[in-house]
Length: 330
Length: 295
Image (cartoon, rainbow over all chains, first blue to last red; front, side, top):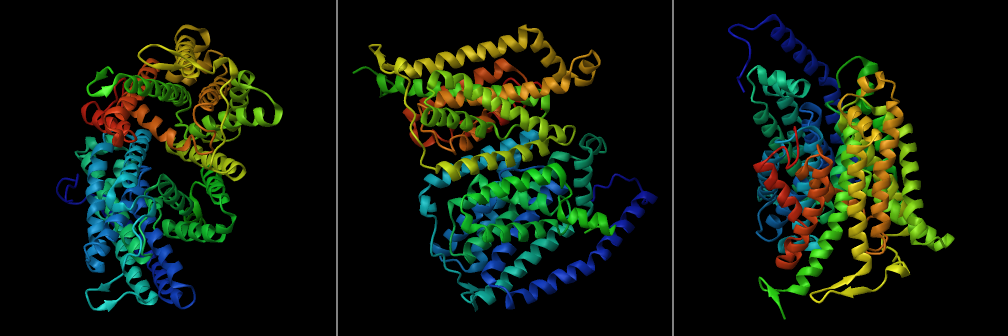
C-alpha cells in the first residue's frame, strides 16, 4: 500500500490532495456524530428487530458501494456473499454450536474465500461482462444452495440460536442484540471509510477514473480490483452472517438474484460513491418494502420503477443531490 | 435395447432433442442481445421479460380473441417489437453515451416492472398453451420418437438464425448496421438516420426474443417468470461466445443447449449449473470468449 508514484518528496499536488482529504473527513464529523446519536437513540423509539434489519442491509449496501462507488465495478452477484455467509454462519451456530462471534466470523471468512474465487474469475473481463459473469456465478451458487444438503433447500436453516457474545452476554434480548449489531455495523462502516480514504483507496479511484493510465503509472490494477472485491465480499458476508443469526434464519431468498438487485437499488437510490448514500438508500428501501408488504407482488414493480427513475433522472441519488445542494461531500 | 456409454440410446436422443430446443432459445436470445449491444452499447436485461411477453401475448390472444398459434407467431413479435421501440425512444435513448452500466440497470428495472405486472395479473403457476393441430403427433424414427412440434421449433430457429446472419452480413440494411456499430458518427455523416436505425434494431432484437417466447409457449407453460432465469443463462452464453460475431452467438447457443442436454443424461445434478461451469472454464482458458475479439 506504499506504492506511491511520486519520486522522492511529496509533490504539491499530493499535499493538496491530502489537505482536501483531511478537510473532507473533518466536514464529515458532524453528520457522523448525528448518525451515531440517532442509532443509539433509535431502539428506544422503534422496534429493534426492524432497526437490525436496516443495519444489516445498510452494511451490505456500504460494502457494495466500496466496489461500485470507488472502483467502478458493478457486481450483479453480491447475494452470493451475503446469502452464502448467512448459510455458513447459521450452520456454524446451529450445527457446530459455535458462539455468536465465531459463527459470524465463519460466515465472513467464507464470503471472503468465495469473493476471492469469484473475483479472480470475473476481473478477467471488464465493464458489462463483469456484471454478467458475477450474476452467472451467483446463479450457479443459488442452484448449489438449492441442492446442497446442509442448506435445507426450500426451507432454509431455521431456528438458528443467537447464543452468547463471548460466552457471557446472552443475545436473546433484542435490545442487547441491537447494540451488538450496531457495533458490527459501525466497525464495517469505519473500516470502509478508512479504506476509501487511504492511499490504497486513492489508487482504487484512479483505476475507476482511468484504468490504462493507472496501469501506465505502474499500479497493478487487477490486484487492486481483486483486493477491493474480496474486501467488499467479506463485508457483505459480515452483514449476511449477522442477519441470519439475528433473524434465526438463513434462506434461499438471500442468495437469489433479487437480493443482488435490491442492494444495487439501495446504493443507486442513496448515491453511488457517497459515504452516507448506501445507508440512506438501505433505510428507504427497507421502509418502502415493509410498508408495501401488504401489496404483495407490487413490491417488485415499485422496485423496478425506482430503478428506472433513478437511472433516467436521479443518477446522483438522495445523498448525491443533497451534497450538491450543500456544496460539501457527504 | 441399444445403449451408448451406459445410457439407453432413446433417452440419449430425446435429451439431445431437448438440448437442441433449449439451444434454439439460447441462440435466438443471445443473437438479439448481441445485435442490440453492438449498436446501442446496452446489455438488454429485459430480454427475458420480452421473451415472456411474447409467450404471454400469444396465450392472451388465444384465450380472449381466439387468435391461434400461426397468426400469433407474427402478431406477438410485432407487438413486442413496437413496445420495445417505444421503450427505446422514451427511455433507453436518454441514457445514450453514459456508462453502459446504466443501460443494464435501466433494463433490469424494466424487467422487474414487466415481470411484476405480469405476475400480479397471471400468478406464478403458469398456463398451458396447446400445440397447434397441424404440428401435433410425431414420427417414430426407429431409434427415437420425434415430436413434430419440437422438430418444427429447431427447424424454424435455425432458419431465423440463418436469416439474421444473412440480413446483417449480406444486405444493405445489415451493412448500415455493421458500419454504425463501428462508427455511428461517420455513418450519420453519410446521411443515414442512425437514431432511427437504433430504434429499429432494438425493436428487431426484442422481436426475436418474443418469437422465441411464442415458440416456447407450447413446450413450457406460459409463466410470468419464464424469462427471468433464462436470461441469466443467456448472459453466460454471451460471455462464453463473446458478442463480437453473429455466427459465434448462434453456434455457442446451440452448442451449450446440447451440452446441457447431455449433462441431463449423464449427471442430472449438474444440468442447471453446467453452462456456468463452462463459462468459468472459458474465462480461465480464453478470457475474451470463444469468438470474442476484445475484452
